[in-house]
Length: 113
Image 1 (cartoon, rainbow, N blue to C red):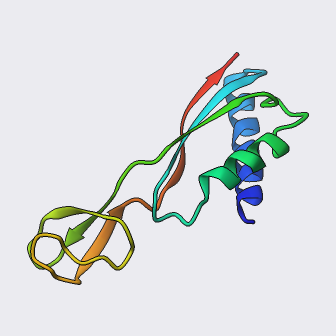
Image 2 (image 1 turned 180 degrees about the vertical axis):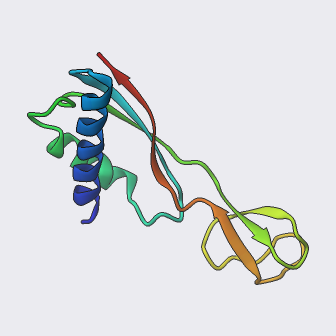
């Protein structure tokens, strides 16, 4: 389960940000997880609670947003929604799609004290 190592990376980011911005507690972490990121939200939630124990983010709430995935069709030059990496263009049927969003795992916002 690579989500545990992702949670450890999130904690490292929180510690670095706390040093820079001089906060001592994290109350809420809002993250975006793209549907093409290969990250399971439930596993990330479980790992978050375990990894944050005893840290400045112990008891923090993890809020997960799932923004839609989109790709640029290289045939009709339209940005279209996709559900899977190898979808075809819903407008022209082309298989020549370049993913432009949906692979991300990013911290969008922190609520700190």
